[in-house]
Amino acid sequence: MKNLLIFIAFLVQFLSLPGHASDYEREKKWADEVVPGIVVGDVVYLKQTNNHEFLTLYTPAKDAKSAVILVHGMGIHPDWGLIGVLRVSLADAGYTTLSVQMPVLKSEAKEEDYVPTFPEAKERLKLAVDFLKARGYDHIAIESHSLGSWMTYAYLTDHPDPAIRVWVASGVAAKLDFKKLKLPVFDLYGENDFPEVLANAAARKKALAGKPGSQQQMMPGADHFYTGMDSELVKTITDYLKANFK
Image 1 (cartoon, helix red, strand yellow):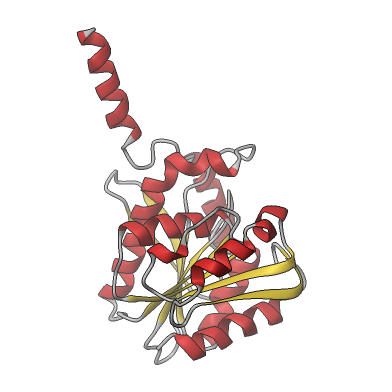
Image 2 (cartoon, rainbow, N blue to C red):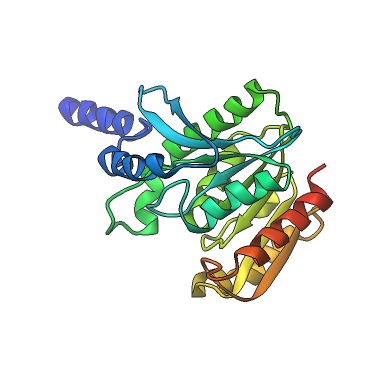
């Protein structure tokens, strides 16, 4: 019995360690592929408490007073698809951006398999916020997509920070209770989004009711990845930030 209790205690401690489930080898492959192609922005590695260094892409905007942290979806990288578009386009619009490599698993992993990586995801987002604060940004927004929105929600509920002024949550599939958050939330999704995103839309909208600066918007014709709608996506997000990111 004593040995069983020791084993259980060890297992609990192990599972609480950030990064235990992350696939660092796959993460390195992403970095090796992404870094040589970066033309706009700077490659910056941030270090976790376990000494693992993860990739971020820092794109300063001229005379910017505000910054946006970008959080990608499942199993990809900080310059992928719509995230790559936003990190450059938002900088062009006057917002410094920091796109963060979030934890990844094997390609066959499902969204729920990522839950054990959330402690590490939260640490990475805190390090990203600290990085921007150290450079004088105390006016920060977060734009997240898909699984990245679930990770961001876990971070925001555990680390409320007055420097984070708004959250743009796009393609939210998980059932998140926005009522737990004090900051304004922009819930964005596509008309042809994933079924679970569409199914939870009414509940998300209800949770936003009465939250100043919060709103939900469906983008006509858009799928989960806003395919072929880069300009519409950028305009929708920048319009919201101009109106609410103050």
